[in-house]
Image (cartoon, rainbow, N blue to C red; front, side, top):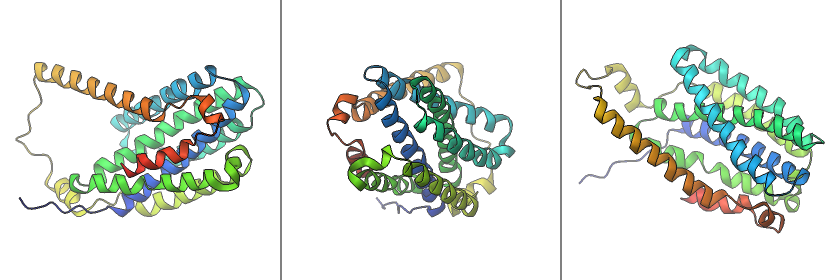
Length: 253
């Protein structure tokens, strides 16, 4: 069997890398601030459950927007980046738990919107043959996240400097999105030009129900794997367990 050549779609990898680095850095800074304001299990409920629910809602809202107004995609992601940065400031500087939770939840909604954007770009600009390598290359930004956590003994995430870093990452994201907006690779562009095959048939009701069951099972398995691999109790984090270091194995996978 002839081996399929795997290539990296550089614009797609750049978009995924910078957006994931920005949103994950902001999320961790907010998580650590919540842990300073309130103890477990409340901190874990807010960061690992409510925060992720708002991220999922952000992806859902982005999908609804794309279904109705695809022409607003570019404007919406720029707006999301700006709002994300504006909400991050009070989320990590708020003096009360309620304020930090409220601003942080809104910030996570924008994290989901941004994630929805780069996942959409992965499926539209990158061919199936290149998507895995492109996603893997983008996830290399986790190494940068770990390097940030290693600076000054991890104190960077607890200082105002993290806001300056996120502001710089936001500016870089604007630049990368601008130069890499809508640059499909050759195979994807060829498929787009040919259009959708007339042989494609919409699934019947029974097939659609089977699809929903399989999709639900897949989401459940993803959630279990994510919780097992990333659901660190706050007490362990306070004792020195490095979330950023553990994610290096995630990036390698």
